[in-house]
Length: 314
Image (cartoon, rainbow, N blue to C red):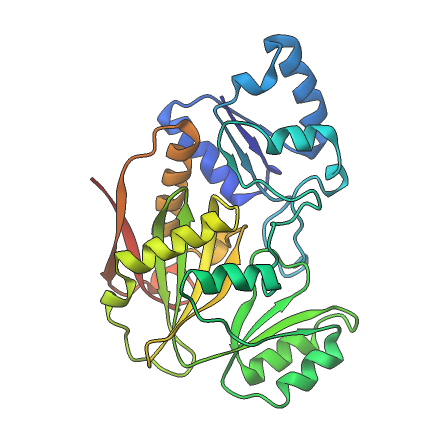
């Protein structure tokens, strides 16, 4: 049986449950309020509740919205509990195991995170951690071009914006909210969605100052493998690698998101990621590869997606 730990409004959890139902895989969905009773009932029925699980997916408490941008992992109040430690120690696949504080083990921009990213052959931007809105705006007043802006508490990743738009966005934040900033070189933005030991889908987005299409050779097997290895090295199973590909050949890692943004992931890529998650949790993951396909994807809403990667089974 597969356990989905997610609020009923969690989009990845909903999509995963539908895919598991189509596959005929047994699963249950529980949120934070139901988890204690569920565990007790499982112990009463099966003795060792862990033995009945083939996989666990850990979702979020609610989807992204403008009214609630600061998303938190489920069960922050349970972070030090015995059952959470037991959950993280399960032998079956757990997507994703979290630290005792309810966060990923390596925070973006930290020395540990930077060391892992550099070891996998990616460049790093120069990150600036502003402690409040005023400090963030002082950085942005001196910058031009594109900027990666990530307010504290946003687990689905930040935004890559022109400097002027970044100033407007930051100016609307609470005065005491910390902000994570990095300048982004001209080029293409690429999201690679990793599940297990492979890339399930790629999304190539329009760059901020250079609309010259990047050759798909840049997204070859070597880069996909490096992204997969990076995610595993960070202790994750399901993640979104946000890369910047500059015209001079530099590949910079802006972020690795343990909670990929469902709403900025094109529909076709969503389907590929969810299918890979279902296979991974059911223990039947097949050998796959990702083939970039050049075609416009304006129907996905934002119009910023110029190519996606389609998952092909071997």
